[in-house]
Image (tube, rainbow, N blue to C red; front, side, top):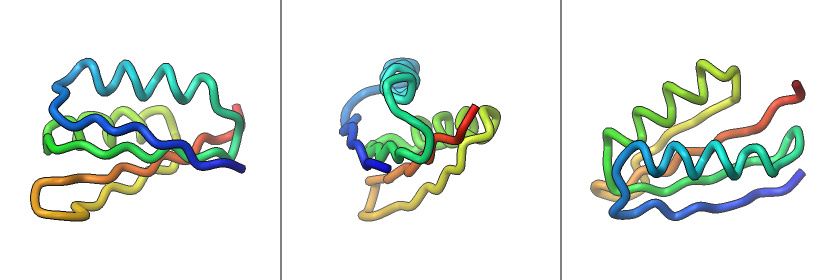
Length: 76
């Protein structure tokens, strides 16, 4: 069970979502992908996408205008 990071500062959708999808395909079940973004719309988009995919997801504003999204990959 590993933890992997992607920093998405300054990137607008759909680029962050595409990067998250690509990275999650490389991970195994129970791995966690931690994303950081400085765009609230990116945080919401990725969170909504992850929920639809049935991933465990948690989003926090860790600093003023900086969001961290933690996605736990589930067994398929």
